[in-house]
Length: 351
Image (cartoon, rainbow, N blue to C red):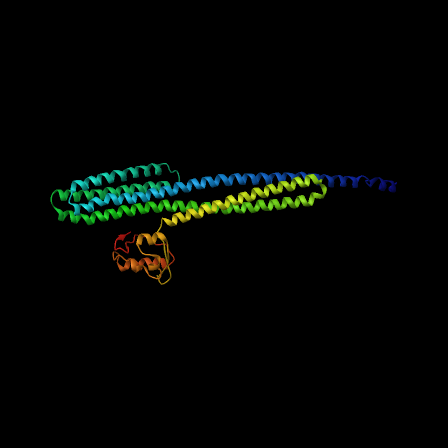
């Protein structure tokens, strides 16, 4: 009875079951490849659309930042006009005229301050409080400077020009404080713009990495199509290749837009540099490079400054210890911040 039991235990239908499972797996692989193709195409289209929207927002944000910096630079120019009557009265001795000029220039300055305040109040970014505080500081310093100018006018009204002359140095110090507050305000706006430029550059680099991932996905997709191509009809294969070409064209267009965004970023960096005074020295303190803004403000040509050290611009307003501390900080690899009074080629002073 044992032999019959052995014959009944051997299952005959096992091989056919294995063949059916093998065909089922390849069938699902086909649909999986099709789904992967759709996912890659959708991701590519999304990236293209996202790049366009990001580029538009970046351009808008950078334009706002540059306009804000320009408005703060205008505040410094208007402050200079407000300061002028308090000095000119020593030459003209026409107190009524200079007092009227002061009132007119102060009105223009206040209007510009009002616009800057409205802009700062509308900022919901981290830089907003710093800009609002900076505008408050500018206004406070301007009030002190105008009070000194009015004191000078009062002494002239009393026919006391000597006392008016004693207040002139104080008014000049108040004016320097106004300019310092304006420069601090400009620096805050400049730092915010530079931070946004760096964020845009980093984001563009991330998009490039994503572009490589999508490119790899396209390569995998094409490889899958080639591997499974012998199981597909000629028409299906041509359709898939046409889809791959279309996706490649979309990726190329996305890459061009990303490069355009990077060029815009570099142009913005150039604009920031154009509004700053930049000089580069070697380890001996000799000037090896300067920008055009430096030449324009100092009055010296590039050829006159290259190879020189900064003593050619020394105004004599700072003690030796001031320069020793500055060079020690810079030589130590740290950032140094401070106000420097230089003498231009024509002998005028600028800060």
